[in-house]
Amino acid sequence: MSEYTPVEYLTKIQKLKYKAAIFPILLVIISFGLNMIYQLDQVKYLSILGLIWYILIIIRFRIRRNVPPKNESEIILSPIYGTITKIDINMITIKKGLFQAADIRYPGYEINLKFTSKFINLFEKKPNLAGKLIGVVSCKSKCVCTIPDDWNINVHPGDKVIAGETILAVK
Image (tube, rainbow, N blue to C red; front, top):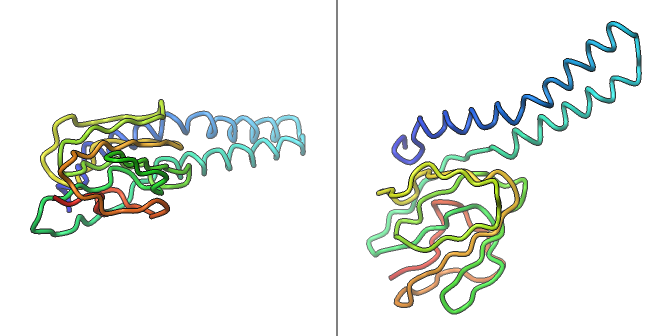
């Protein structure tokens, strides 16, 4: 399983998460200090706000374990978690929600991927293993996958897809 989730990439994701979590942690610490010094009861609401903010950050950077399917023919896997919203001739649009896992996985075949989010961190440009962790998208996003014309699309609008596991197309 380690070849699908490289340790150095998980370390980079942890650093991104810690960077994002500094502000809510500071908010909790400052509100605790203000409550201890000035005995203000209203400051507890800042602590609650900081805690909720921290929980949202943890959810945004969630990475899940995946098990790519074993298949004899060539396949293209879903690069992100989400729901298929639109299928045009050879373009599949996947919409990822805020509370879905953040990992971007290699689809197993060189296809064109376009993301609509600014919060994308790609760690590897030329992966070699289908289902391998190659990056993170830590918020809502849309991904448009352009599939070659000679492939058969295997999903339908409304289907929920799992990054690195759901087969989008078969040759």
